[in-house]
Length: 157
Image (cartoon, rainbow, N blue to C red):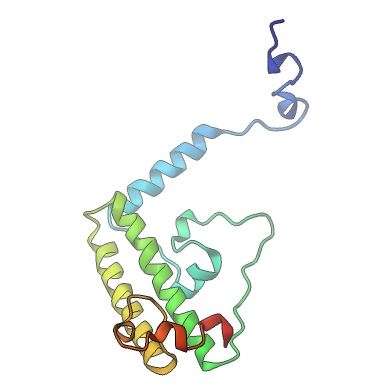
């Protein structure tokens, strides 16, 4: 028996009638324009907080899902605020790191990456000074007793 999944399924059903066929060439050209834009050191970025709540630091690459509106993060304590600052700075640095993997000569992205990385290191250091180690690579982790086991973890606060 010679069976083909195409015998039972009409993959073009969605394009029949009055529905518009997607223009993938336009989408491809838009992506190329975005890539050229980034390659030429023209970064159009959200703030680290706005990028963090959207999940994308780059305004020209953000594609909103349906009617989704990013929510504001509610902060109830100084510790939560510090963790939010760590998260948003680390997120911004990571996004720029990914960009630099593809565009290593983008000086603007490199400068921002270094800035956000320094800020991340600083807010982690301030957090750990006040609330204990956050990462296993913390300087506080080099002591006996092993501090990781003795302190509450961030989600236990």
